[in-house]
Image 1 (spheres, rainbow, N blue to C red):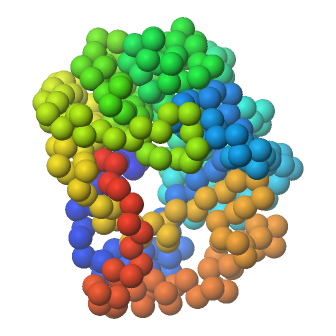
Image 2: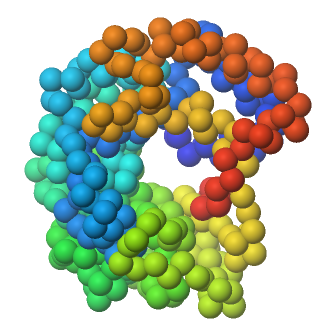
Length: 337
């Protein structure tokens, strides 16, 4: 299943009535439409300068490991409605010793797309093989600097050599599993953006399938907080044109905003459906405050809160009423194929 084609289709559909009516029909017919986003451990092995893990107050209150004995219970209650299982949403999932079991449970429950987001510094050849063997479809790798100096500067405690070893391991595994996806997420600021001109020279050998380019966002009292990218106004468009051309030549999907003006002015019009499709799970919290996966299934709780009625109501609400539901967040990227 190509989740990026589905995501692009969602973006192309601008009519909120079609979106909500579609979700209503999927919900009522017991089809998959949610994205389960799972942080099994609230910790990270790195200290990236723009990340909340360099905020001491955040680190002090961010604790917890999801109980191994609850994994099967959670999967039974949630995974049957998941279109995608995203493991790692802001913490480092490779610190979780039972990571492979999560992937295996996703496969057992026939989740069509299972993705792992990681900084890759703890990935070994053996771990890559195990995760793929258990059913992982995609590695999403975080990158904050193309060259070693910027990489190790922005990604505190990271090893440039270990990063490349992990990419090589994934590349080798892709030879045996041609459907395995390698996605690289590049988070840029004014100090590392121009390094993207060398991206393919440094990483093209690993044949990534997807490259995401997005600006850093303010994440609290972090070590690096300069989110001002106005100095890139004259260079952004030309750099993206070159990246776009090379991506097309390599038949690689690019997730980016094509122009500087679009980047700084756009808002996320897809936020209307966000609260109905995004199900976040971490130690101590699952999906909604009132939801208890030990007592209720996704379907049972949905009936309790009248979710199907709400979806149908939204389908026949006015655009003015729908505007009240929007979450005003910046648009990080478009899908450019």
